[in-house]
Length: 443
Image (spheres, helix red, strand yellow):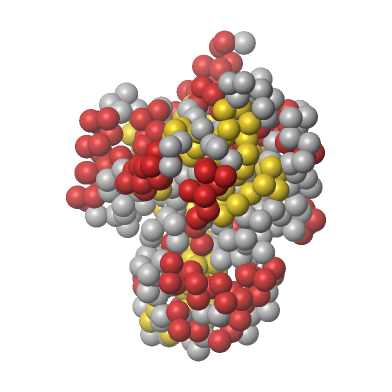
């Protein structure tokens, strides 16, 4: 060991952690990354960050362990620094992890934008959120549509979800639905990529976001960063748009790193206005005025569209919601539940029918009372989700996920699809046009 080199563990969830390693640690001889730890996502520990991606300093790759092993790993590898590198957790949660590291004699580190953001040759607009499930994805789709309508070629770069073969997933490009099959995408990946593809956009994702950016720049006039969870962007953004959630007022200043987004934002969208309580909207507005008074406030609605809505009245339905939103996102419901209730359906509790890892999800997230989270991080879990659906007695399945589950599994019930879209009141379109106009003047 070279004298002065610090041993480091990076805590992550197969996303931000790999990016932080790539841009800050990979070729940095001042640090020795001894391990990653993994949480939030099932079955991503027990493998390695491959040598082919890890660089010349890590010819054997880097092991990935379960986060529960952190104290013993600190001792085993004589760790100096624990670098926290995942998102959508409360401030209390972050400090509990900090105390765990400190009590085992390691320092606790949070890497910031200056050390982790890459710069693009093209204009970058970022869409981020204060929490998972705030409405970031439909907002991203609206922005892409608006830009394309004005003749701009847009490349969407999505926050990473590399849960499979990391070498194969180093750079991914999705221009057709067939590309989702080619890259063996999970349900969670399909939920994010599929709507963009149907919207006519090309999506990039993967592991190495410097290489990904160079590929995207070849075919785009504008880069749109579509963030994951409530993480801050991997790229320097000329226009930082952040979506706040009036269904969870106060979360904009109490979750990491969503508050970072909230404080950095040029534009803060208060979405879901058509389903939010006025007093909750007022709380979010007051926090914007108090903590980021320079931000433009944009109010918008979330339009919920239901196929075959007339069939729902007084019928028993199983509601399937976006997995991350209702699990670590903390929501007890999503667009599927709102749609079912709006049209008079009776929402049943499917938890007693859960099998395998899906049963474990209900134990881990006891707030889930009447929805089935669309967990599908691999073939085995997708099969367990399918079996859970098929075991549940109901008249219809209400699918509130952005992906088309009927094409991914054999479901023995009629599926009623729910879609949701950002509905602008005119203000966001004006701000987008102003940003692009200002960029043209600089050239």
